Length: 94
Image 1 (tube, rainbow, N blue to C red):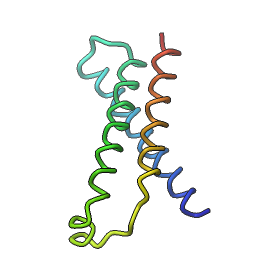
Image 2: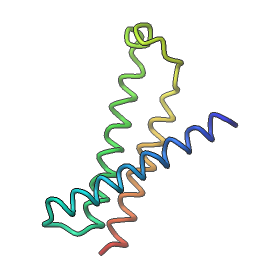
Image 3: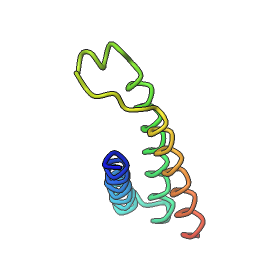
């Protein structure tokens, strides 16, 4: 169960960072709604989770960094979570 709590905590932190990043993009760049900027940031985090899954599967990188093994389904679940969150934010934001 502690692993699931850690997974949820990392997802919440990544979601907050994405929301702040999307809001900053809206403030600095403009040209899009706040909800759309946050949705784009969440989708970028989803893509990064999939890229991290590929990196985590590398045995060479795991030996080099001496990191614990993280199962691939966690990255896939995080990616789906951020994709759905982005969709919800985009639809509700108008």
